[in-house]
Image: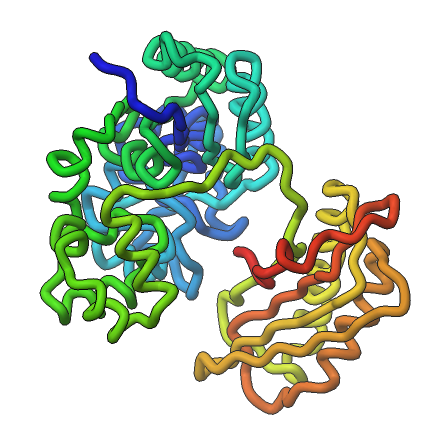
Length: 383
């Protein structure tokens, strides 16, 4: 097996949240399990020591699927799908609540395990990282196997790794042989192994762009690579079309970034039922305060403070309103954040029922007063 000309690995934990839950409830292995319910979907301990689990068919509300086991995915249940819709596809699937404290714990464990073998890591989220393996050029395949074993030993969980010339291709490859996969790609193999894939496999081509490409009869990466640059520019604009042309050829010059500052800190929640500012004032007030406290807690953990406090509302008709306010001094105080968010709330109409409420804080700086660059603060709300 020839080593890739570039040595970038993308490691993706397999069905991460669901797999963590299966460590806690091993009797559910091999069954369709969906993660995304609230506390009401917690298992009930029975007198005989067994557990009663909520089934999707019993769920009433408008929550969304956070993730699902591969058995549930085989039934058509995927992340971001409404749980009520998922219940129609897999009524007997088991529903479990999310537990982000546990997921963060296992995330820390797997990243620490990888760092003992290959410390050049770019953190891309709770369940995925990029790894620079140039220092292991002579045995990248062997090191990737060692990393997989280290993750298994540290967490009891499996991961999939793509090893390729760059980040773009490594991410595509990590998804090709899930679960517990290891895919190695050379530049020479791009036409045979990457071009036949759907354009949707490219990170950065979302549903809208894919649908637009389909109207041009472009469905595979090969068809995108063969498309005239002028046609792409006509439909997608100069910048995005140029990017499409590059990635279709497997070109990606991004480097591993080991240290990055947080962009912003935010929390949001979708209600189980539509709430009204007056009729459900007490419940909304409690939820609002809780969101502000969680934002403040995130700031403390990240060792940053922020000045620009914002809110996000989604009404029952799906329209969205945002407002923000800039404080005189950066803070991580939940009381000050709650006060500023409350001022923002008073500047929006509250005559319609609400589906979602969010709080965020930007204009971040470190505790020592160092400003986090504005370019790093692009994303306002993260689920």
